Picture (cartoon, rainbow, N blue to C red):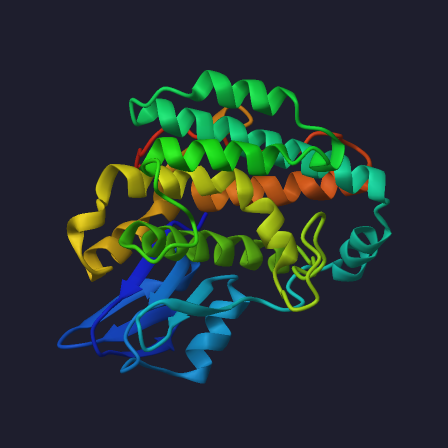
Length: 299
């Protein structure tokens, strides 16, 4: 299983040789591509070969690139890597509205429950109220429990004056972390043969990642937890250290169907369970549960 997440900050030349990714700066660093989960190229002075990009895509590695502000603005993901891609696209298109609404209900409930755990992990009261809201989530969330929970949750977590649309360091960090997780989910969907633009709930014609925006919801509180514990409004700019920490969330543990896995593999299990729900062999998605900020270790 891929486990390395490479964060390339300085000017570098990135290429491939003998199934290894070579990152050349003052020194040459070599990484087996089969071990790589994601690569983030922060500097616009980095040069990467087409051969390296193709090899990363073939291995299903999420390759992030950043804009002039060093914020993720794109992700390269695989095409036609699944042996039965047409089958999964057909299943995705054929799902009826009631099933899609029930799946969205599960996702919203899991998100709200994870928001409650986030408050508790930050020693903030409010989990009981969020659990109560989660119990009231309707099919398709027609009662907008997600919005009600968010209005309560973010003000408890970041203060009564906080809103998600204001310009501040905490929001910048949240958006950065969400972009990383969203990209990995989009990569995973593509690897399994889905069209990320076809969502369960999100349906914007201008969004190429509607389904990723559906599935990211239970994972957002992990980013929230990291930001709440590590970033205060007075810290200044979104530094490389902050971005490195947010990128490192891909190696944090979450609970998935009673087992602990890194975020990227928990996302993989979630996408696999989506396929079983589409096939009709299962009714419940395997949605990750927040357990804290625990970095996964490998033997």
